[in-house]
Image (cartoon, rainbow, N blue to C red; front, side, top):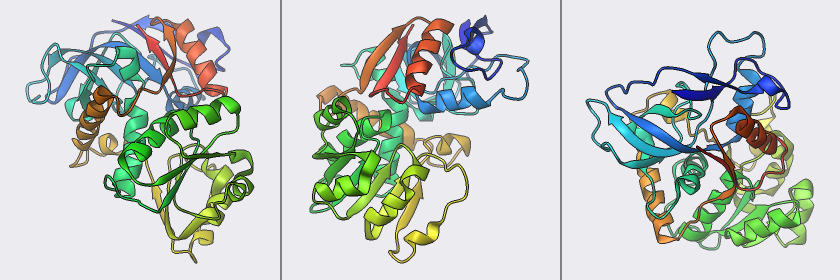
Length: 337
């Protein structure tokens, strides 16, 4: 099969930062499905792995990146129960296995959902990783239930990014929370409001901007963009006994004592945890994607796809990664094969 991957961690501007190559089509294991990939989307994890996986030496075999896809099931493993050949699916997959940036991929069925029928493959490919991240943060880490949160507030830091774009929608449609999102440009402010934010503030001077909009403190904070940059602001803005969930690793040790006197609950969210540790509740990701599919088919939630690139080629991936790394990306960027 054809694939696009890396052998060295090079700056994205360099021609060989991505290479095209051929590799054997994978065979599904007992709980795996073999998917003919139709479209993939780009996430920050893609360029972080690209920048770090081969820094010290060139890899013997190219590494296939990619952790979001939509496609068609071509074969199933002997113990597969959730899918059959011909099913259209979408998923984010597993960090430990070869990624989505190839003609075919095998993935554990418990991490996969049926593609929403009303969405194109491109629209569907934009959704899994960010939706799983936001959904797990809200409903698994905060243990929120639908229609909870009346008279409470949530601050979404990074509202116009991939995770923020779906997080705002899930909060505005499925909870009673007042949703405050951060943005720093006119176009990103509009994006947040269009996706369901009640109020938009500027994350470049977050505490002051919040106070200008009449918010001294909030009940919940979802930091989807930069933990280090907003640590002090979060300590200031969170209410006593409030909860914070973060998805971006810190660059070094941080002082958690600033949250102690308020008895703040701190949570980490990584949507790969269930796959990495083969947890007993791995099928929860199938459940989340199935439920999301209902909302997408109903039009309650809309795809966060914003820009589409064409072709399983190094050029397409270089262009998409350049945009993702620029910090100016809005919503999700998808590559269609």
